[in-house]
Amino acid sequence: MLDVRRLRVLLAVAEHGGIAAAARALSFTPPAVSQQIAALERQLNTVLVDRSRRTARLTAAGGRLAGHAREVLAALEAAEADLAGDDGAVRGVLRIGVLPSLGRALLPDTLARLAVEAPELDLRIEEAEPENGLPALERGELDVVVACEYTLAPRRPVENVERADLFTEPMLVAVPPGHPLPGPRVRLAELRDARWIAPAPGGPCALLFERSCALAGYEPHVVGHCNDFAVAAALVGAGHGFTLIPRIVAPEHGEVRLLTAIDPEIRRTLFAATRPGARRHPAIACLLDALIAGGRRQAID
Image (cartoon, rainbow, N blue to C red; front, side, top):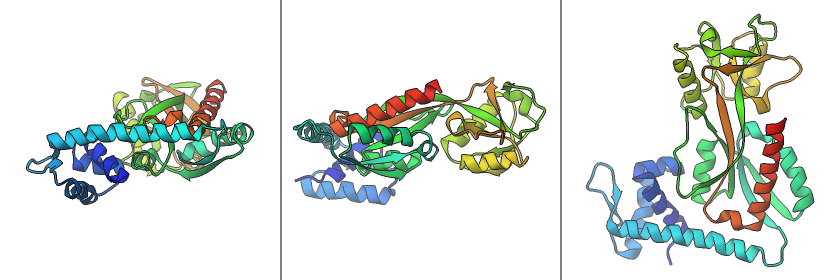
């Protein structure tokens, strides 16, 4: 019997175009991916990956098995969904990875709705940045991941991950409360001399910030790096600099001034990701409905 986890690894190699790319997508090391593929090859007595090239690629046999893996994994999701809906009840354990900036804003409404509509559903919630949550979803360790995608830093589509968009929101420019800059809109080019508290390097939010400033015609003067929006806002409130902050987690009560950036506009889209076929599972469908309803309320607010 073929191991489902190894089939997921093989499928990742097929979807992402090689062992190194699959390792990045799954948050594995390349040797760990190679070990899983080698175990499949020993079990089947067939070469699945051509390692003679600089970038390892699936052989014809590996490609055929990846095709079967895609069908098998989707069928397993469908079978679980079919059996779970036998009595019409929504129950069981769901493992959900949630973007940290959404936990405070979206989860309370979602949990309140589920408590009424699916009281037997047991959610196991893990705080996870998309760079960790989406690989865990592909590996089968999470059932749903709430993540985001920024303008100017789109995510590469992955065939073995489906997404349902929740809402789109602006990334606002936070400035100290007494700053004389007029509003409520500001051209990013007007902020070329500003001191910036930037996202930590390496992530999509940092890429968005860098590309947005580049389109405005300058390299920003960065005086700090911070991935925690609440901490960044506190630094802005203390007069240390400006920062970008999503509308959904923007502080209230005059702690900072919030301006809408234009030229370019800076936005992000929040989405829920699942594996193919998983949406037919009653529990996952119920959770997605609650998340989408919460997203609509956030968009209206």
